[in-house]
Every structure is written in C-alpha cells, then in structure tokens.
Image 1 (cartoon, rainbow, N blue to C red):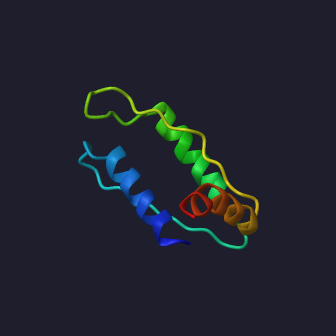
Image 2: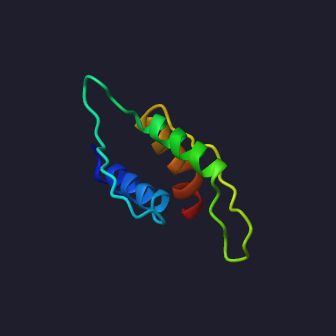
Image 3: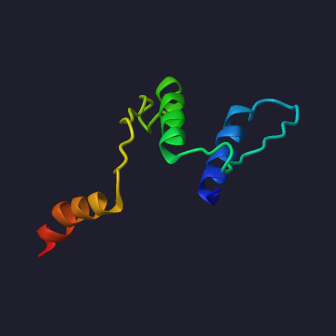
Length: 89
C-alpha cells in the first residue's frame, strides 16, 4: 500500500479523535484478495471532506471538486502535454 495512503489515513484518524482521551488502533492495508483502488480512496475522501469541510483563513468552508482519474498513463501524458508543455513552447 502506498505510504501516502497510510499517512493520509493517520492524519484523518488523528483529526477525528483529537479531542478524545481514549486510545484507538487502526489498521490500513490492501491486498490482492481485497484491493483498494485509488478512485475508491479518493471518493471516500471526497465524501468525508464534503460533509466535514475544512475552513479557510476567513472562516468559510473550502469547497472541493470531485476527483478525476485518467484511464491510462497515455491519456494523462496527452493532457499534461496539451495544457502544460505546449504553452511553454
């Protein structure tokens, strides 16, 4: 499982339980038998932060967009080339 997924899960669990004195144990993992895709994790994070928005410096809720995933690295490279590399040339 990628380290950033584990760290993100740890951060969310600390925020959720920051005002509680009890100890909590979490296990974060994925396997071939029960795989977790990036899109499932991103959609879970989107639902969480949509219902529990982070507040900006002005005190207003920061809105987030639904995550988007490219279906292949080739599509991602085409996007990056069109929107970032071509304008720089």
